[in-house]
Image (tube, rainbow, N blue to C red):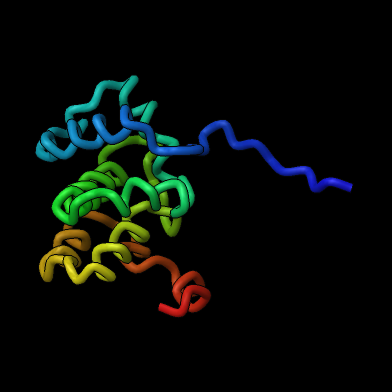
Length: 136
């Protein structure tokens, strides 16, 4: 007998070039309350906020470290400023930060910046349970 899964219409299956373009746009507008995104653009990005780390992996692995730092800043601010973007322990900031740390490119001041701009207690390391599972 086959297992029956659940379908989540808000789950992202992949990060498209369009998503990357919108993230780049938002990264250029971090000072704007809406991060420079229209309501429709925010709707396109919303499913990425709780997408699995595997969904982010391909784009993250091929992105520059400078881009990843900018993405972390955008995603951190999006959780705070954009309704519905709260991700908690499923925040993509967590796997992106892991990649930066593995590369040795994690900026010394980024943790302080994240804490100053977010109330998500899981950033940037994730939940203790997830960290114990992954051996971090």
